[in-house]
Structures are given as structure tokens and as C-alpha cells.
Length: 91
Image (cartoon, rainbow, N blue to C red):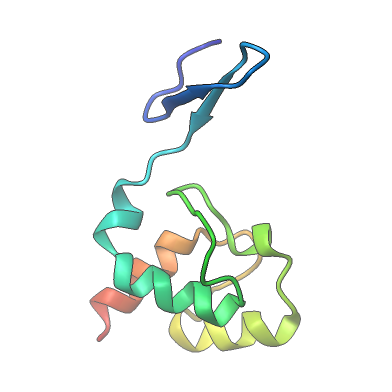
């Protein structure tokens, strides 16, 4: 497998294939804000990385409208950490 900058090899599955995880540095930095966002999305238990997008959770249009109250430019393509960072800066 090709190494991708910032991604970490997590474990080997039983078939011998590598499983990699995207970075979580920003998710850790904005943990409280991310938890709030995940509750709004309806998935407070979700495992997210710095590459997780709102659309990964197939949100209803009303969920995106609620997120737009925090981060006006929110779309399904918006990274969750971008919303969290914006929320942190605009307390």
C-alpha cells in the first residue's frame, strides 16, 4: 500500500489487508465542538477523522440548515473539523 501523508496504518484485518485511518489531530483539538456537531447530525457515537464530511452521515436538509447557523457555508461536502474550528473561533 502506498503511504499517504498524515494517514496511519491502524491494524491488519484477518485477510492480511492493511486498514488505514485518516488523521485525527484537529478532531482531538476541537473535541467538544465536534461532539456538539455530531449530536446535531444525529450520530453522537460516530468515529470521525479530520477527513470526515457532513455528507458522510446522509443528513436531512434540516440538519444542514441547523449546521449553517454555526457555519453559514455548510454543505454535504464540508469537513466536520471546519465547522468545529469555526465554532471554536466564534464563541
